Image 1 (cartoon, each protein chain N blue to C red):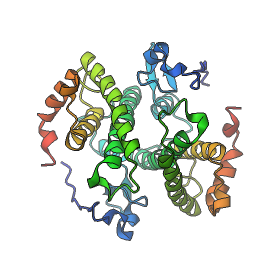
Image 2: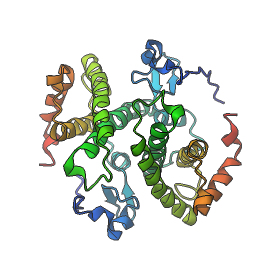
Image 3: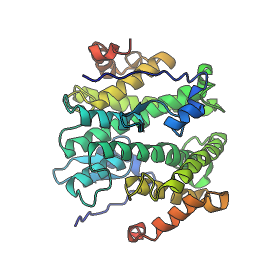
Image 4: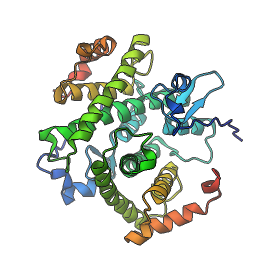
Length: 185
Length: 185
């Protein structure tokens, strides 16, 4: 069982830009994993790769190199085009995100909010053919997609079901029932 | 030795948005690798993971799971914050990219062009401490960074040396002398 001590970094107060945090993360990003040997590992997906190396079961990132490549493909599509578009929309249009995104470009953000619907419709079609984002079983791509959809739910009021994406809504509701979906409280 | 048949997709003519290409790549992206069993693998980094699985030597993505995680961390920093910022700048400010990015938001693009300098300065500092982007040896992160810098050279007229980033310039010039840097012609 993995036990991690959590240290909060207050983004709204700009603590991520402090010299203390930059010593852990030179581009002022969160999260960062501090290893026992004192090194700092940043970038969420790289931290997941490291943790999956330490705890290979249950496998979430692909068993063979071939499956790993296909899971990575899908995880990137979800992260770069779905989550990335949602982040761009929220960071450039939401007043609450102004401390994190300066300057905000509202027209750009609104345009990203429209484009992200195209990506969500692709995911909705995928989920009409298969039970999970990357295929027949639960993987990291489901985690990435769930975080993206929950972020869009909270900050863009995005409800897939209300926009005709019934498969995406069903999948979201199924994932939300998993115990790990509530782990953060 | 790997031999791949190349099939060109003309982005300026919009061929990537054709139904033929969408059958290979549902979000209309390039490149895509067609496998012998007829499946299509998209996303450049996922294709690299697959090819490294087939041809493990020379290793470019990390030997142990631990090294793989640190290479992935650095590769992501280069891809998401350096290359991503360069792409945003060029796609939103360059008239030649208008067929690929509609609508273009010029103010956003110019702002991204400024922010990308901060990331380039981080990379310049790293390269003052170590010979390659991810450390002591050549990895995929050098390939990603070289593509980013060459893209910025061509389309943003970015010259690291002329902007006080001597380490980044020296590294770029060293990488440009490698035979593989000319492989594309």
